[in-house]
Structures are given as C-alpha cells and as structure tokens.
Image (cartoon, helix red, strand yellow):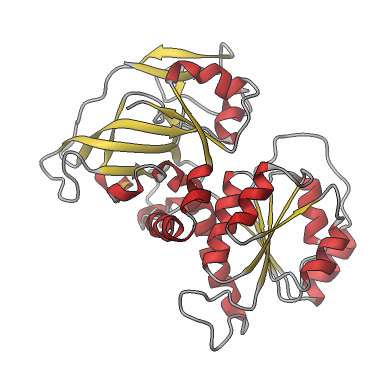
Length: 370
C-alpha cells in the first residue's frame, strides 16, 4: 500500500510501498486512515531536523495527527467494533521496568527518553492507507465530530498544558472561590503566542475555561487568522503594531501565557512581562539555531519576586485525548464555523510534496485518504 516516507540517510521524501499491516495480537485493531493532519513537526522531519525510522527500515512513515475507522478487531478487543471512528495517541512507552511513568501509562512523562513515537521516532506513523495499533492507544470519536476530529491530537497539546497549569497553580489561591466549575479561569487573563492551529485551539480551550483570552501574533490586522480568532471571542493583537510592553499594558496582569509559536526570542520577551503569580506554558520546539540574548536578570528577578512558574509540556496522556474530544464537542456547539475553518484544505496523498516541502499556506492542511 502507499505511504509517505522520509528516508533520512538518503535525504529523500517520497511515496513508498509500505507493507499492509495485519493484526498480530488479540488486543490489536486494524484501522483505515481517513485523514492525517500536516504540522510543523512533519515538516521538520521532512527537512531532516529529526525523525528516526524503525529498526530494519530505511524509511519512516510520517504523520501523527490521525483520524481513522476501525475495519477489524482482535478477539480480546472489547472497546471497539468495525465502523467506529478512532484517534490514536502518538507516544509508546519505553521498555525499562524502572520507568515509573511508562509503567503507569504516563509515557508522556517518560523518564528514560527511550520511548517511541508514531510517525516521529522509531515507529511508523499514520500517513498511509491502513495501520494497526493496540486498543489501549486508541480513543473513540463520536460520529458527529467526523468533520473536525483530525484536530484532536493538536488540541491535546493545550489540554495537557492547561491541565498542568491547574495542578501547579494549586500552590496558591488562583481560582476564584465563586468561579463556575466549568469556567475555573473566570477572572484570569491569558495570552496565547501564535495563531497557528495549536495556538488557535489553545485560545478556544482557554476561553472555554473562562479566561479573558488574547492572541499575540505577528501579522497585522486585518488578516484571516485575526478574523477567525475574534469570531469566537478572543482578542487579536499584532506584534508588528504593539510591543510586548504595550501588550502587558493592554492586558493587565497576565496570569497565564500559552506559547504556541516555537520562537524563542518573542517567547522570552513575553516571559519578561508575565504577571504576579503567573504561569508560562512552553509548547514549541525551536529548530537549532544561533543563541539569542535574553534579559536573564530581569526574568530571574521577576520569577522570584512575582512567584512565577515556567513549565514545558510535550505529548499527551489518555485523559488529554478524552478532554480534547469533549472540548471539540463544546467548540462545535459554540463556534462551529470557526472550528471548521481551522481546516484550510483537504488534499490527496500525492499532494504530499507541496504540503510538506512546498509553501502551501493555510492554518491546518489535511491529507484525506477516504
């Protein structure tokens, strides 16, 4: 069957003939790929920044943002049946018995670094016609979310990051005593860095939790992303027209920053303006480049005197996938047009070169295989 493969030793990206998978253990599920999202990680793998094939292969099938349909289940599978829609997780646990996170199904916090990741590190991904996975790595998707379910995996970035923020901020009385249970962020201000899919989905999630939410991105208004952001109630601010200092003056005390831009310079500039008792969530992974200058003394002083926290987040656990699917349902009720417009276009697999190596614009481009 056809798949999009990266051959790092030959520095090639091309369609490959990939062996059709079969169920090998009774807890496995065979899945037909319906849609696979394209993200910055895929593009970096295709530019050979990272990405490693499985043992015995000279290519890595890429793609980790997947929506699929169950076509066959093993005899021990109880949670799925033929025809179900599913979203797979990305990371698989390391083999070391002393890695407590992996042994407790929290491989997103693997302590050894010997995990594998589908479509990224030593395990083939989902940009192919069929794949097989164990049912414990699959999350069911309601049929009414079929049109947007490919957004689940990028939304898990926000879900895990914000879940960590709630846990960390238990260190102080952060949530208003009378805040609604489903809007704990009421009275708090959040700034999202970046208006890509991870940033926009993060802004939706923060709004859904009650935060007064601002998206700080480069492009001047008017532009399509600004219009999209403001259509669901967030405020859009351009870094080309307002400095970081002006941003802080406009927002007031910044309680939370959700970084989704992957650019260290702007991230550390905004970290300098984080408010009292604030938390800064890093999600971006900058490509290797020359070192930058930062105002380290001011940042360190602020973090001490303002009781601030900076936390990094990568990958996601099962709860984050379940929360992402639940929140997509909320978004579809509140902002259906905005949510659907995140998916800029759906393309055939043979458009892979333009999508991965070209300059195809848009927010979220998707390869559709159904």
